[in-house]
Every structure is written in C-alpha cells, then in structure tokens.
Image (tube, rainbow, N blue to C red; front, side, top):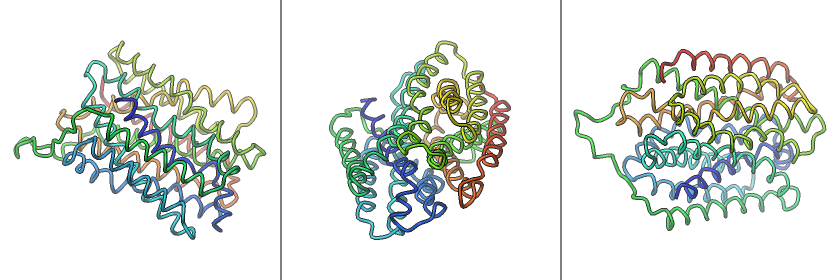
Length: 380
C-alpha cells in the first residue's frame, strides 16, 4: 500500500518536472521566449500557495484515499488538456490544472502516511514517502528530453497522462486502508484552529521548508537550461541537475532511519540543510568533474534532509490534532518556495540566462537564511 501511495507522488513530480529539460525547444515550439516559457513551471507551483489550505479541508471531509484518487484523475485531465493545446495560453492553463492536482496529492499522501505509520517509525516512514519528488524529478529530467526528441510533445504528455491514470486505478483498487474522515470528529471547543499554528517555532520551520523548496526547484528547473547553453546534451543536463534527487532516494530514507535510532532530528536536519545551502549555488557556477562532485555531495549530505523536514515539522506542532491543518500550511509553503524558485530565477539570470554568478550569490544568501531559521527553531 505504501509503495502504491508513493507512486502517486512520484508521478505527480514526474508531470511537474517534465518541462525544465525541454524548456528551450518547447518554448520555441509555442512561440515563447525563455522568460515567458518559465511560466510553465511557475504557474504549476503557484497553485500550491492558494489551494493547499483548501485541499487540507477537503481531505478532512472526504479522506486521504479518495482525494489521492481524484487528484490522479485531475492530473490526467490537465495532461490531456495540455496534449491538445492549440497555443501557449492553453498550455499554461493546463499546467495550472496539473499543479492543483499536485497540491492535493502532496497533502493527501502525507496525511495517509502520518495516519498509518507507527509513531516510533515515523522517521523511516516519512523517509520512504520523501523520495516521491526526488524520483519523479530525476525520471523527468532524463526521460523527457528523450521522449520529446523521439516522439514529440504530444506523445510525451500522453505517456505521462497514462501513467497517472494507472496510479489512480492502483490506489482505488489495491490500497485497502480505510478512508479516514476526520472533519466532524472534534467538538467545537477542541476543534483545531489555524491561529494555533502562529507560534514562533512553527513559523520559523515553515520558512525553512519554503527555502528548501526554493533551492531544490531552482536546481531542477533552471540548471538544465544553463548547462545546455554551455554545450551539455539535454539528457545529460537533466541527469546532472537531478543527480542530487536521485542519490537522495537512498540517502533520505537512511537518514530517516538514523533519526529514529538516535531519537534526534534537529542536528541532522540543520547539518544537511547547511550543505544544501552551500552546494546549490556552486552547481550554478562550475562545470566538469567539479559539477559532478558537488552534485554527489548535495545528494548524499544535502538533499537527504528531505526525509526529516516533515518529521521535524510534526515535532514543532503544538498538538497532534493540528496535523491536517498543519499539513495544509506546510504544503502552502512548499508551493510558495517552489513558486519563488521558478519565478524569481528568470529575472536574476536575465533574458539570456547568463547571470550565473549573480544567481549563485542570491541562492547562497537565501540558503543561509534558511539555515539560520533552522538553527533558531526549537525542537528535539
């Protein structure tokens, strides 16, 4: 059941990240410059800012399993809309529909894991769930340019839509866990309120999570285009930019297991975040073997912190009853971080995507700010 649920997240990430490694030729095909073409990523992530909290309320009302199935169906609808887009405007709108599906998949999947895993194995369980973005973005970075070159735009969109449809069917018929509905399980005096999330540590950690998503999406979305400008083949640029995500598929669950064994989260979380903050800007300004070395270090010691982000967040929530609302706020910051990562980078890089050192400096500044927030946040 866990593997099927994780597969839904993987396919959502696959569809989200199918654009970056083919951004240049796809933009040319639809008559967009690189900056305008970046809307295909930013509108996707923009949906998380406004629809994460409503999605958490929908999950409370209808249950995680049902929302996972419906989200996969919505992802198929968005992909089909994009497949037959007559122009760039419709293509961007289709990406917004896919983005809405990603929002609800992310929260519903996390809710399913949180409801199902034993408390003393939460780090391990969330470590397994955390590979969804890494595996999906890696697969998209490598496979998308190959499919686009061999079969074209429409076939690429249709293949990914078919995979999302399979995920919907698998969850519907093979995930036998109960569809827990909790909207009416609290009396009025004890009902969770969003204002309870307005604590120092919750706010600080939401900032940490937003910065984490900004850094990772900046790598996945814009490093492939920069590397292609330096002479890298599209498939190779996709491989390098998603290599940290690929490695974290192994390192993230292992770090989750280690946190369970040690009974500590903050030292591991802060250390991995610092490495991510330092390695991300370096990947924008180096090439050759140094780029590969930094990508490997980022994957082993930086991106592996993905497994601890939600574990740490659950620790800073004031009480367990706040988890559904808290996950809505958590996903909102994911959307905000990813949106900022996809939206501000074109302005920093410039119309020719040539301001690599400026982009590296800005990412370093933002990353160190996120590390400081992590250090100030109080949790075990």
